[in-house]
Image (cartoon, rainbow, N blue to C red; front, top):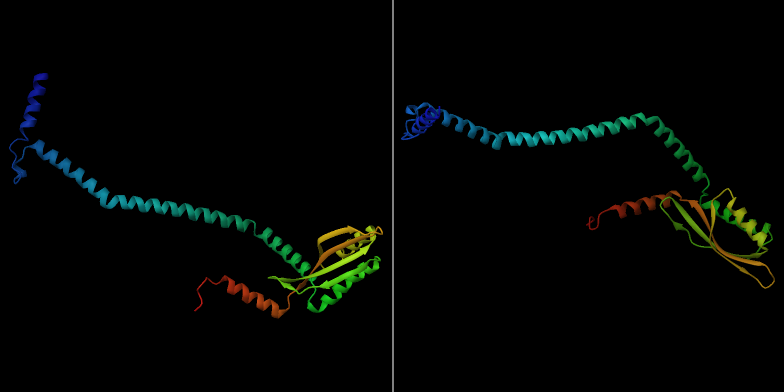
Length: 222
């Protein structure tokens, strides 16, 4: 058995000696089979390198795109499922905004609002040492009117005055409160009563224009 193996290997090796590369059709069987296997392997390697590897990368990209589209689809499905709840929430927000807007006086109603603040203090027996409205500060959707005030009265009356101002139908907030006792036992309060009003059409247009100009990239206009 060992001798036959040695003879067969020797015969096989002998088939590869003296091959004429220009006449492969004259080669023995073993070299022709070996060359065919080598050629097939090279074709597979070159095919993978120049064709199938690109297809594999494209397949990976398409799989990633498919996953992205699947997630977007699931997100849209969730939004559709919650559409009615979102509509109801939008309706509630719109009602709340409308309610808040009704609490903002317009420019012509500001004098009445400031008079209400003053009357609230007088009704509580407070003495006004200062009541000075400042210039309006425009915000994107409303205007702030700070009113510097200083009142003197009993502690209970000062507290009730602040409660009365908070209970007004229009929005007025007390800010920067400073309290001090007087020599006769009364209480002095200095504060800024911040009143708010809606913007008139011209002010709204000016605010929109300012916002649009601020949104432009630097150097964009020539």
